[in-house]
Image 1 (spheres, rainbow, N blue to C red):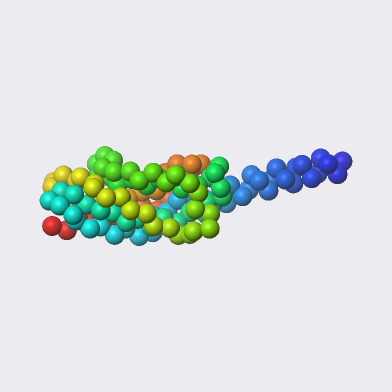
Image 2: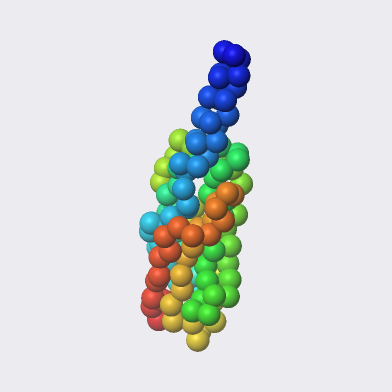
Length: 122
């Protein structure tokens, strides 16, 4: 009986640690123009990474129509580094695009957290 209760408790604790991580939120975006249509993005993401099974694993730059203009893959959990900032250089954005959005993705919930919109300056 004790073994069954212990096994159930361990199962519940392992399940809830992933569930409490929630969705990945973009909390800050810094944009630097590096060429006529080329930009560098520094993006800060907040997510309660719970290890390899549930972590923020990428962020995307999208235009007004939802087309993905750039993606920064995050190759490992950032359990002890929250929030964290990563950059992506050399992102080509057509001159016709005047604003972008940055959204984060996590390995469990996919998209759904806070998105940040940025107006691109000339």
